[in-house]
Image 1 (cartoon, rainbow, N blue to C red):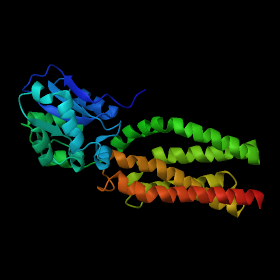
Image 2: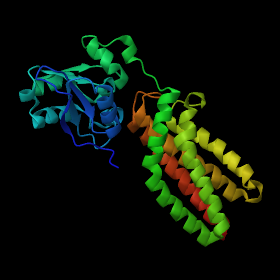
Image 3: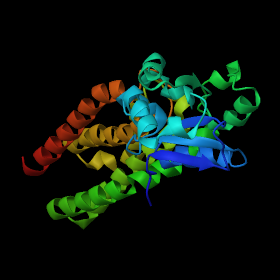
Image 4: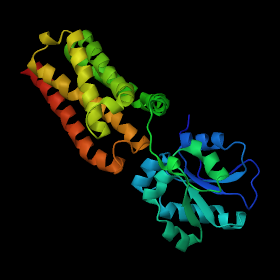
Length: 296
C-alpha cells in the first residue's frame, strides 16, 4: 500500500477555469481526506511533492514550501487551466510558504483556509473567508484515535525486523526464554509509544511528545519489571530496561509531532534534533550494561 500520490493537478468533480484551486501534500491520507470531504464540489487540487510527508511536517522541512508551490504551478501549467490567480492553502502550511514570493514568482496569490479539512466546505460556502473557529488548533481524542492505527501500520515493517533481530541475538546469548522476554518488553514499548502515549497525551507531563513518550515508557517499564520478576534480574539488567524501553516509547510517540502542533509550534525538526541523540544514547548505554552484566 502506497502512502503517496503522484504530485500534480487533480480535478474533483467537473471544475471549470473559474473554480478554486486547493493545495495539499502528496501524503495520501491528507489527499484522501480532502477528496472525500469535497467530493460533491467542483474544484482543482494541486498536490505538491512532499515525499509522502503531511503538510505540517513538510512545511517544517521546507518541502511544502515556496519553491515547490512555484515549481508545481509551472509544471502543471496551472495559469493556462484557470482564469483566476488564487491558491488556497492549509493554515499549517504557512510556516513553509512565503505568500509574497509566490505572488512575485508565479503571479498567484495565496490564501490560508483552515487547519482542518472538515472546515473547507464552510470556508468555500462563506465566500472563502476564514472564521476564528477554523484557526483553532485541536488534537482531540478522536483525532488521536484515527492516527494510532496509521502509525502502527507504518511502523509494522521496521518493528518486525528489529523484533526478529532482538529475539535472535538475545536467544543466542541468554537462551530462548530470555529472548522471548526481551521481545515482549520491546513490543510492549512500541505499543506504548504508538497507542498509549498518544491517547494519554493531555494527561502526561512535559511539553514535548518525546518527554510524554518517556513518561509512558517508564510506566510500561515499571509494569513489565513487576510482571517479569524484575527483582531477580540484577542491577545492570534493571537499569538497561529502564533506559531502553522509555527510549523506544519516546521514539514512537515522537512521530505524532508531525501530526499536530499540539505541544510545540516549533515543529518536528527542533524536537528531533534534541530528542533523537538522547534516545540513541540511552539505547547504547542499555546495550553496554546488558553486555557487561553478561560477560563481566
